[in-house]
Structures are given as C-alpha cells and as structure tokens.
Image 1 (cartoon, helix red, strand yellow):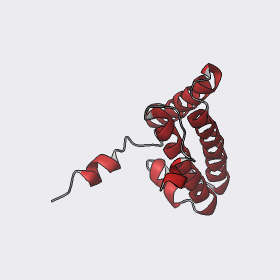
Image 2: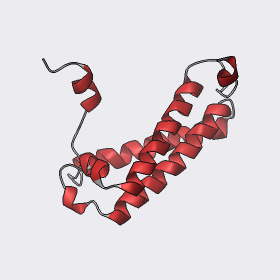
Image 3: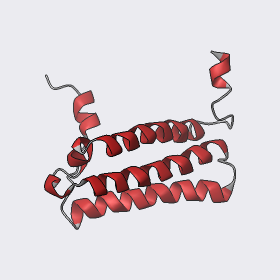
Image 4: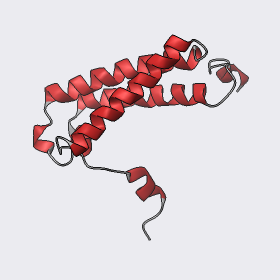
Length: 121
C-alpha cells in the first residue's frame, strides 16, 4: 500500500488529493464523451436532440484539458499560477453549466448524487 501512496500528491491537505481524484474521474468522463452520446444527453437533458457527436467530442476534449490542468495542480498546488489555472478551469466549467441551465435552457439543475445517495424508500 505504501507503494501506491508514493504516487499521490505529497503536499499536505485534501485539496491536492481531491484535484487528482477529480482529474481521474474527468478522464473517464472524457472516454464516455468520445464513445457514446448517452451521458451528454443526460447533462443537456432539456434539449438532448441538440447533442451531436461533434459536441460530445468537443466536450470530451475540454474535459481532458481540464483533467490535465487539475492533475498538474494536484502535484504543484503551491505554485500560484498553476493553482489559479486549475481554479479558473472550475470557474469556466461552472459558467458553462449555469449558462446552459439559465440562458440556453439545455441543461437542468441535477443533483442526482444527492438524490441517489439519500435513498428513495
């Protein structure tokens, strides 16, 4: 087990580990975006007919770029420029999803992880 922990970010705190975790999950999401439209149609659930192969691959490419930024930040969190770039990647992604929800009406406000985690009876 010690061998595996040597690959984790060594900077104290949870943020570096969280950034690495999110980066790994994002890579999986990118693979999904390149392989199927199903998951992107869930994100843009109000207008799933507008999700195309091109938009899905573009989304996947953006997600890979975000994953790289966040993984790099996980290991270099003490460098202000790297930290800022990672945080800006969250800000841009957040602005995108909020605009798709409130401006373009293509995405819904979905908290499935809370709903599924809270139990359904």
